[in-house]
Structures are given as C-alpha cells and as structure tokens.
Image (cartoon, rainbow, N blue to C red; front, side):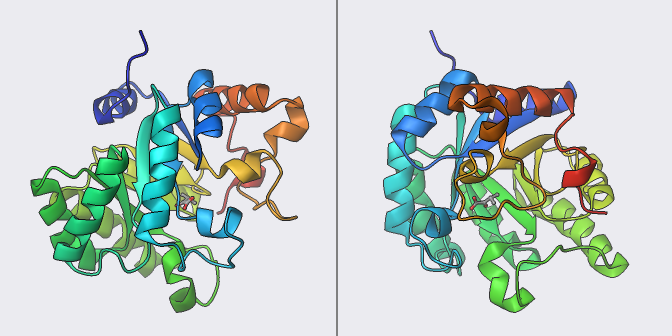
Length: 265
Ligand code: KIV
C-alpha cells in the first residue's frame, strides 16, 4: 500500500540530512507520473499563470484556478506531499487568507504557500492556529515582480541578506512549517537552512537547502524557449519523461543538482 508523505516525512528527511525533491504539476496525468517515480513533493504553483495560461506574470491567477488544478493534482498524487500556492491578493488580510486557504485545503492541499516577509506574521499565526500548515516563500517572490522591477536575484546586498535570515526565523516562529527560497545566493540559502528547524526548499538557491523544486515545464524543456540558469532540461538528457524525473530525483539526493553552473553567488 502507498504511504502518503506528510510534513513529518520532510522533517525527518531534514534531520537525517536526506535531500527531498519536488516538481510543480498542474494536472492528474503528470502528477501521477511524478508520484510513481517517487517525487517527495508536488507544488501546484501559481506559475501556472505563465506556463499554462500564457501570461507574462503570475498575478492573474485566481483562487478558482488554483483550486481546480489542486483537485486535478490531488487525484493523481497518491504518495507525494501536496503544496498549493495562494495566488496574488488572496491573503491580503488574515481573514481573507483563512477563507481562501480553506478552499485549497479542501481541494486536496496539505500545505499552502504564501509569498512575503514580516507583514505575513499575523496571517501565518492565524492560519496555523486554525490547522492550515503554511510554507513561507522568501527571496524572489514572483507576485512582487512589479515592486522588484523584474525577476531579479534577491539578497546579494548584506543588509537584505541579514533581513531575510531574520524574516525566515520570525515566520517560522509565527507558525510556518516550511520555507521556500527562490533565486538567492547559495551562501544565504545555506545560512537560512541552518537557522531554522523546518524544511527549506530551494529553487535557484544552491545545493545546501533541504530540498529542491523545479518547474516541470523547465525540466521537460517545454517552457517557451527559455530555461532559467538555475534549471536543467532533464528530458533532453534522457529522452523519456519517467527517466527524466528519476534522474532529477537521484541528482538531488546525491547533491549533484544543482551543479555550480545553476547556482548564484
Ligand atoms: O509558482 C511556482 O511554480 C513557484 C515555484 C517557482 C517555486 O512558486
């Protein structure tokens, strides 16, 4: 019988220094394939606004979109832990966050992911006290693309880096049970992973986070003409979707992905 992975599984992996692997998925068929290959976590990312809906950012994704794709993934993922993104402006207040997180949890998510730093403390406490597990997304938070003025590496400046370490500690203290770091220098991700006792998942965050996540369209080379520096086309290397996923999982576990060429200093 297939055993469902939970946050306890990922906590134990962190304690045992075993790396977990995660991919985005948005439908049942891909979720099933990734699940059968043994992926530890599936993220229903609001990246679907870009890779499925063809927008230039994630801001147009609705809670109904996320609920629909979460239901699709949940019916294909028998063992993987399921994390779902709360889309832009669906968690601007703690009350709104509760209402919208409930929709995703009822669609099959085991945890919801929110982008932001200090201002999220109250919301994270409110959600976790009401039995909604939360992942705090720090670094390059794509919903803030227009604040950043583009998709840029975050945390290269010492003050910003120090602040990000403190934010991670504060958000975990507020109740976050996972941290996701996107596009930050590897040394900063290493410091944050050591500073908090919850699993830290990285994308473009070096090799020392507790787990790695990539967007499925990038590992299959079907993103529109561009693969980010921090990603890798595993389909080109293997010629088969199942083998591509297995190779990604193995390389994460052996710490050979990300390699130096995928890492930001
Ligand atoms: O939306 C998404 O796919 C994400 C990943 C880039 C981490 O948040």
